[in-house]
Length: 473
Image 1 (cartoon, one colour):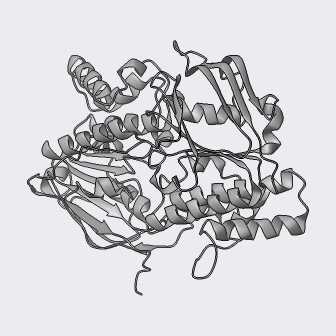
Image 2: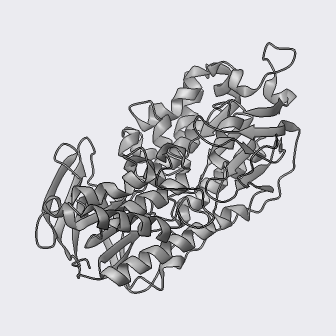
């Protein structure tokens, strides 16, 4: 059984190098050993930074601190063996080539005996719903073939397997299908109840956790302490009414099958994407949503079948029969299709937020003054104007998502494909994101989103449910 760990912050402050304002300031609070705490606050307020600080993974090369932050009465970096952290982006926590080895990594580093390690590995994988009867994942499955949601479960399994005294979870259910949310909350509940560990979890949707968590610590927009209470925040989102008018067909598919190297090939339903509409792709983790998104965006070749490009999207391409978008030159893709990846960090190439948003406009030859106006307008819409000079990698997870979205949308392409657009958003930024999607559609784009967000599904024009179907031979 874990020895629960306490936390004590006394006027603690953290400031990233190169940033004018501190990410967190004047934090004073305690978390008693064994408490179960929801850490909440608006997107970008420093929640993820605080979790990384508690895990002892913020270094002097990243910034500086003042005051005291104690974990188990010592410095956080001295208590790393006691702390398990699941990051907001599970991609960054995959270490080993095989699923079993990845989950065993923590136990092996902490000298758990081999027979006990592998007992814990199997139990952890089953508890998060990643391995067991009827599931295709095994100890020998390659981690590279897992979907984003499956990697999220894998990261959690790896942390709970070594039974930490302080369990830190950053948006652990954000990319999961509904059953995945149930599995993960149940797994965390079981681990906390069995081990007695202290729990701190960040989640913009606290409802699934309310029976487990006992206390709320809220940060304000500037990174200060807003409140501590036992009252859970009430999620209220102003829905954008889906009263859009469908236009011409922008893209359609026939007998399409998609896949990535080393992954199973998956058949998908025939699609018809029209200008002026928002289409949602949904389905269980591993059903091919992200792979289909990359294929529609011209970033992966189809495995079989056909992608048919509408006249408006293919206008100006020098071919009698417009080829599949993966054969288009890069400049043609930038002009016509905007893509947002599941991990937005994978598409950032510029040193500042402002230049990242403006890159597509420069490539497509938009007038300098018009480009500057568009960039400023989009940054203001998404609450990023004050961060225009910041490096994209220093933003919070929710801010990175919004930055990737406006960078893809600023050129006003005919097709915009977005993977999990509302991930990491608080109530207000959720409305900003959905408003932008609506504006894109009303301006004539065909918008495609992958999502498990029921509130987003309520405001789209069409829902396409995917299931992991193997093409018929």
